[in-house]
Image (cartoon, rainbow, N blue to C red):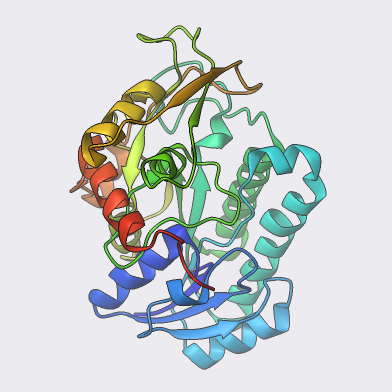
Length: 323
């Protein structure tokens, strides 16, 4: 297929682009490079540097690429920043997303795959979390993603636009060629590995009194190659709706740090800090729907596999991408 990928220079988008090209698809990456990296784009892809606010440019690019499918990764994704600047998040994640949807209709694209988040659930009333768990976002980031999910439902109902929306849990790991480099890094695994690389003196544990086995937060980590493979499966005609993507296993902050020590062979200093507001004790996915309806099966479900691939990439790219 001819695939248009927004945010293909980002962490997850770059790995999807690589996997889609390996599967024989033609890919056009559309990215502003505000958060993404030029060298994270597979050289086999066509690249257009432009912003999602430019609706005319999107339509022009879709038509030139003869796009049959849009995979939408581009978004602002810092929870703390969204609490300080909600307009930035609603303007881009919702407003510019609508421009992309309107461009899809104008260019005759009939299928849309969306990168959503488990942040739409807020504090879940059940764990593991199913797609039917009530959604109650607790920050503008999660709310912006939930709002766009609702927009997708209306475009499907009114315009017949087929969509799949994936609610990611904690994306982690690396593909070999492409890995995790955010200009502002908030994710646990890369921050812990910075200590092992000698780039930081310590990592932080926020809260040690949660109702979990060791008192620290528990999260479900999913390898980015497994995420990418789910998107490839979603491209098939007829797949529609919302899907959780996670491994169904939860690991605590302390367990992640211990695994990073095991994989790297280095002692990692961690200091304990008070809880951060808005951190649920446990977030673990029930991804049975994706397995049942899409035929998705994670190839790298274990934490050791995830951390090992991340560590290998960070060792080879100690300063991340250079652009």
